[in-house]
Amino acid sequence: MSALQLSDIATAALDAARTWPWVLAPLTRERGQAYILQHVLRNRFFSSVMRPAWVSRCPDQAIVRRTLSQMGEELVYDPAIKAAHTKILWEMGRNVGLTDAQMNATVPETETAAALGLLEHLARDWHWTVGWLGSSIDEFVLTALPGHNFHPDRWKECLGLAEEQVFFFRYHLSADLEHAGIKVWRPMEPWLNADVEAQIRRGLPLILEAQRLFYAGVERQAARLPASGT
Image (cartoon, rainbow, N blue to C red; front, side):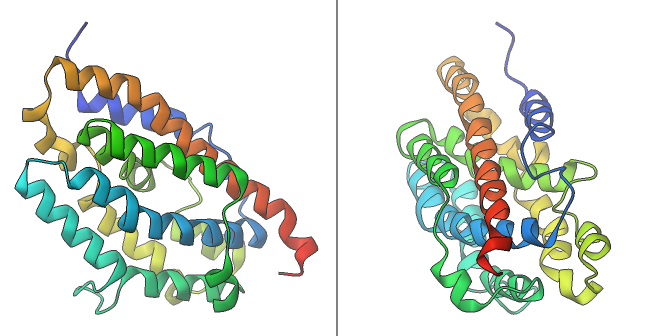
């Protein structure tokens, strides 16, 4: 078996992302609202459950420090914007017609719950590199896949939003370059032996299936939103 290449992981992620629900679908207001509502749950999950689960077993202190900093930016404070990323996520929700009450009370769709459960299992029970990939592949796709619904210009064009109203997505296009991708994942290479590579090969399809399930949950909620009056 040939040695695992980070470029192989990136290629597999982009190929899979083109088949995920929501990602390349026409962006409607209902789809935008559903994404925010389900991402509120995923955003909390990544920094309160998944990243702590794998980073607590990571022996590379540089990776640990970088990840802890990312968790702090998400939940507490990012000095670049003088706010936590959760703050600008809530602002994005309001810009597409959601209320704070809706975002605070959101619950996972069946597929979203399955996705988060699978990712938690990978982060707790598999090698820490699998957990790292599981908590960052979606951020890589955000920066690398053309024409996707994460791009701020899509929200401007399809939903009539102004530039200042899509700051959440505009900022993450640059911030996520530091969170995922071949260059960011490079520090894991010294830790890749045959056993670890085998775990990544087995775990990658599960990670990508978890991402597909998450977006299937977004689509399920989007289909129900008009009837709910949102």
